[in-house]
Length: 143
Image (cartoon, rainbow, N blue to C red):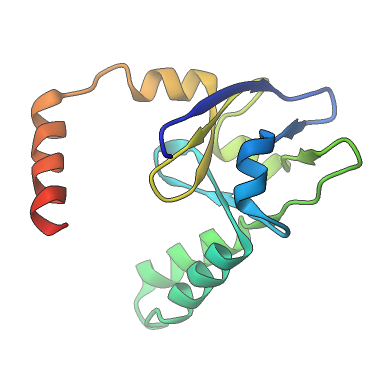
């Protein structure tokens, strides 16, 4: 069931919890990496393997493909929960997503997403419904 979101805060040591319901879906050994829109993607072990496989299929002589693959791989963090179920958000990922304190954990269409509350609000501040309608038509046409 996509679309659910949860509000959380980083603690003083830059740790947070993935909501229990979402953690169950992820299973053991999930990863966090950069996503579009300045959010972070949280992938299950299986999803992480799929992403790595897709990235291994790039043409190493295509600079933009190689740059994208390097950026994603460099910024992929294997999350480790402590005894209280908290995970550390490393500095490079916090910086990329502009996360300082308040976060939104969102069950997105393809994976779980972590957003800075400020970036989340800004992202949805200027929704163009004509563009949204066009995107939905394209999705239903191809689906």
